[in-house]
Image (tube, rainbow, N blue to C red; front, side, top):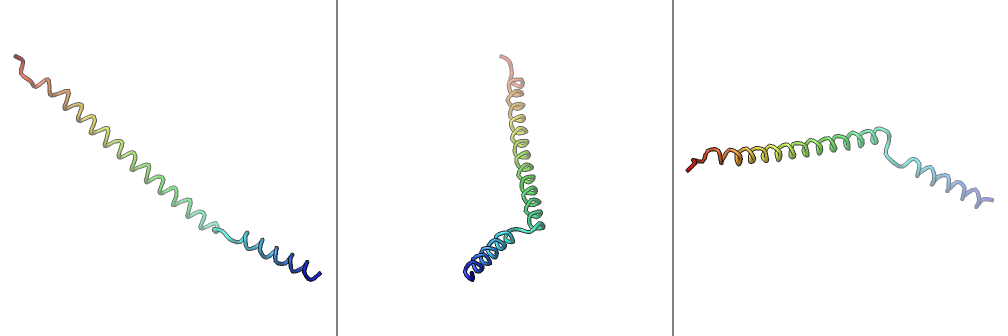
Length: 74
């Protein structure tokens, strides 16, 4: 009987340790906020990069289109 009670007590202790381990609600909230901040930062960086590439391509197209108009006709 003593062994059975020891096994039950040990299993209850082990179960409570697994349940108690893990991040608290405050830690979970902070992790979610950090993840959102990082995702927003990445999205902003990608949008800025795409905008810069589009602007560069548009300027190159404008320069290319304007070049034949300035040539003299022979």
